[in-house]
Length: 191
Image 1 (cartoon, helix red, strand yellow):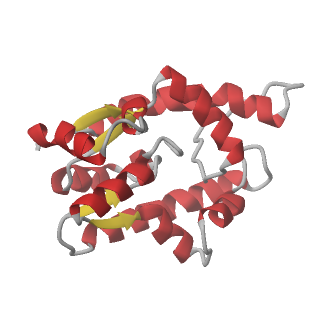
Image 2: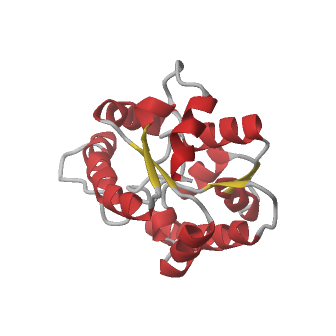
Image 3: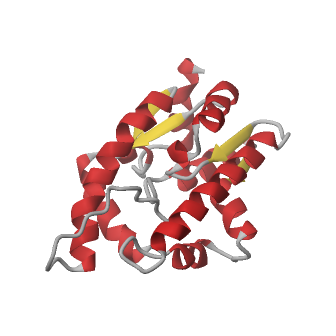
């Protein structure tokens, strides 16, 4: 999910162990002509904003193309920092990702869910909602997002788990007492 710690952890591991980091979000926002994540998020908008569903579909298409491009980059020891919506890129991309990369799912703990909901508004990132955003009459836009967010996360969890070679909790990877070496060692036996 957005803000779960994927990019933070990927950068830490890449820097420490001299991996080549490929950021799919960056490939997408560059394709759109944007300079950063904030402008990408602003372009996509919120699930309650006019034109969102069209931008969501375009975003999935851009993400599919960017992930395909990232998978074709020939660089040593790559870490592919996918988006949280990589699960919507289609079976062909997901099979290739599974075949060519060791996939780590950073799982949201209950504590992380509250943090993620708050960060959604504080640090906006583009988010693919699919059909998981629901707004009941009289409910504010923000309250609808906060109520829908756990449903989206729960729906994605099964797909993430099925794709993963390893699962680490967000609480673990974001713990300041856990070193990047500890994280890597935790994955290494399975490699």
